[in-house]
Amino acid sequence: MTKSAFFPVRGLALAAAVMLVAACSGRELAPTITEEQPTPDYLIGAGDNLSVFVWRNPELGISLPVRPDGKISSPLIEDLQAANKTPTQLARDIEEELKKFIQDPIVTVIVTGFVGPFDQQVRVVGEAAQPSAIPYRDDMTVLDVMIAVGGLTQFAAGNRTVVVRRIEGENKSFRVRLDDLLKDGDVSANVEMLPGDVIIVPQSFF
Image (cartoon, rainbow, N blue to C red; front, side):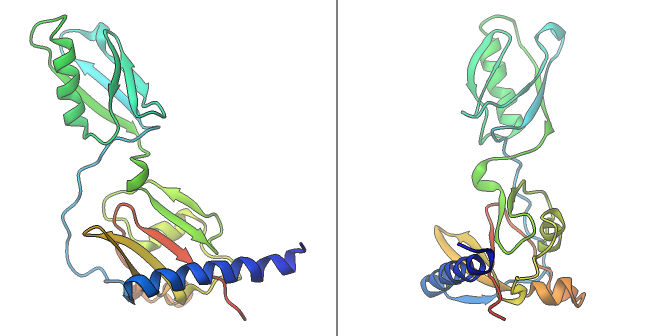
């Protein structure tokens, strides 16, 4: 298949996906940044780097990654689940394990490299310069996401972009005006991201 034939096919497939989501849940403009929303606690994910400190027992301290299975292994502890826990929750779990060996352990867990759980990442598909999954961070907006993925391709229909968001167990879709934001500097088109959002950028037919 030639490159010129590839883009229409991909565009049609992506447009069909957007239309399917819209048909199931309805589309409306995504809410702009007007109100502060509660910041979700950071959850550890596979690929995160952790530093574990044990007070008065420096030999038990360690820096380590979270394995692809979401678990960690540290001195005196094997295969402890870390993914989908807050650093504080993981610290308490490590303390419980260490109580088998030392008296009254006090543990601190610090996340030094952030990836986050798979379902908490913000994903960008379609006509982005570099479609990818991005770790969510506090106060992240769609502009931050676009900067991270290098903006849009020349084939993108930015103002037909859709954000798919999980709300109360259902997928809801919202329209985002990326062309107005990125090309015209209309900051009213900037919207706040939430963990797990999926941004679908369709292809222009013209």
